[in-house]
Length: 294
Image (tube, rainbow, N blue to C red; front, side):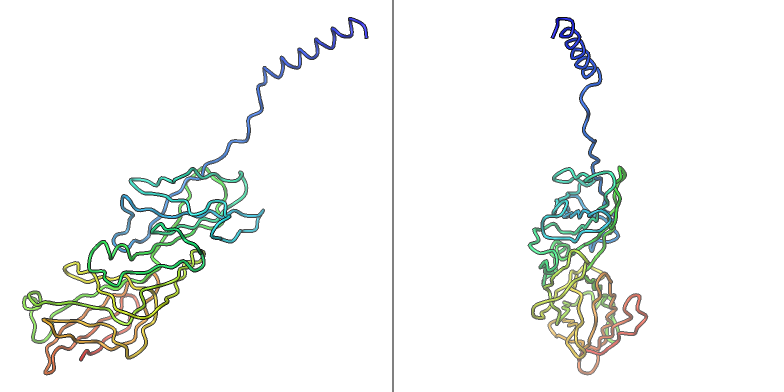
């Protein structure tokens, strides 16, 4: 090889290096972060989340156009904790896997450590007489399906999957509002299971365990309790109202429906044997749920 050929080769190599330096390195494809917002339709205590609340988020990727199945682990993202102050902040930044593959999102509240996503154990408190115990019995769930990668916020609509009982105590025959207000009154919802298994993929609730009673939270003008969705058999002791130490029980079957708020107007009437309790219409069903307690 002659000197001229060598010089030409060196010149071409130098030119290639120079061009590479001018163009710079090839940048990797920019990852698109996932922005989340929880569209809260419901919360037992309010219709909004409060500062300090935390939810768990699962993100399930697709295989091409085929959706994946929610699992306890091995999803695109597993049970990432998001905490709320004035907005939602995750413990880690989530990214879309690419710019075309969709994903399914699952959210639940309160945040926990599910060992199973198909049978996650949860219990409502049997004593909900305090605001904190009442709030802790709430369970909110939601999903957003088939969401394509986007730089916009992904809204996950959520809602109650437990049932809510609201009881109003009204004076009837032999009582005035003043006399009833001055009496010592307690209320218990009876023969209900307080334990459940929750399917985080579908939001379904399965009651489990033995039946017991739930003491509702007295808000002053009404009593409220979170109840596991279930059916109380006909003829069961459903509600007991105790007035000045004397208990009167309504025997009745009832179905507590997931996501529904059931309103009971309890009218207290003095009778020869004590008190007669009538239950008014269940909100939204148009059915007379009246009955007598003895």
